[in-house]
Length: 501
Image (cartoon, rainbow, N blue to C red):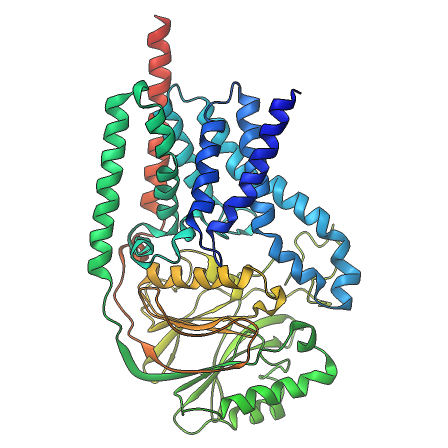
């Protein structure tokens, strides 16, 4: 292999690394666009199929390895995770790169078959978006950091997700990143490139106008929440000598500040099974009066011994309704193919968690919410039960696993995107941050920083309106991208046959 080619691979790996700084918490758009623009010039000028695939793979490998490196913090939490899982970190990086690198490599390979600059761009953009949609379901799904999420500091642009979803925003962002390459190759196909740039510009301007109209003044209901963020480190959460103290901390915070209709604790906020542990449940509900509720996460074991990650709604008398997490985290809450992988989860459970039956809507005094637990909040279009209209989406999470990394900040952006897509406010309670009240336009109205303790007293934002995306979901975008990819390929085949004649 020539030195020039090796240097090109190194440069691509570096650009994949830099591109992640476009996401939260950096939110530096040039850090994404400049490396990506250079990437387009390299990959679209590949000399053969192998080269195109490798260029995409190396960029994607680096992009995802660095972008998901925060997950390894969970393998270094305490003595158990360090002793049991720290040796897996190099294999984790390799596995992430090998699997997720394909999401750039495959579109790069397909783009090679484009016969001009325009067809290469359309093939890459449409196939990349199709794979991003599939990333939500393949291998149980892990749709973290869709490219559209780089706009998280630009609320007017982010509003487009209410119409086209996060993946639609990804499509436009990738297309925008290819414009410099198209301009440099303008002579190849002047009319078509001009038409595409003109059409895209009009579409973006149209979305901006719609976005401006749909951003409504902040409206608050009369219902209030008190979010409790104990700020307790993960390594202390499950220690037997700390369990009671952690529980009492939640009780003390719940008594502070103003009275609230809903007191909200985070994912597995207490280590006690509040359905079976009568004393703990009595203590938890002792902070309530006759007119308010406690919502909290807790572990639960049923009569058959199955374990669940639960959300419970409690009043003064006890439990009213529960929800069991249905989309579990592989290796965190269960071991896939456990028959062939004899290991514990990183939570040190003897038994895998059991998934619940799916999305639910919980109602109290005519006020309803859609409960989600942590990981479940990153799945676009899968956060509200079909044919229901809850007042808000509730996300209970425990990002204490990931320390002061990029993960919790990016997880918060996912909550903002779900609010915009569904047109519903999101109430987010994090064990160690970032807790927040988010309105239906994705605006953070009040929050508590990562790694701090405290409470949020705030009114619940107005429910908002059903969005186009909340009705159509991914279907129109998926069909559009499949048709675009197919038509572009067919036109390339026709041109190729004409040239032969």
